[in-house]
Length: 108
Image 1: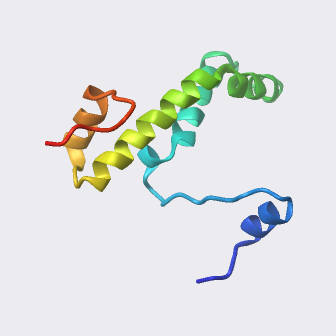
Image 2: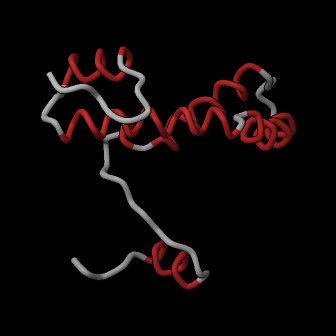
């Protein structure tokens, strides 16, 4: 269990930190929202040839600005706060959309 994967070893040896999120919880990982926005841009601006894709992918990643990435992170924190308070399912989705406080989800 304590053995690190080859990917984790390579990242640590390069001097970076490696944080793995739980699998199948995309709402707890803001990078998934970032990828989604980049993929949307790529789909809208690509003719699906290899050369076009090579040009569009870097532009797609750059198309998501820092402000939007921060919004994605805030939404992720709202979901984490909800789950910590025992709120799940449809109620969690509703509360994450309705309450946009920068501090926390209100007590119920």
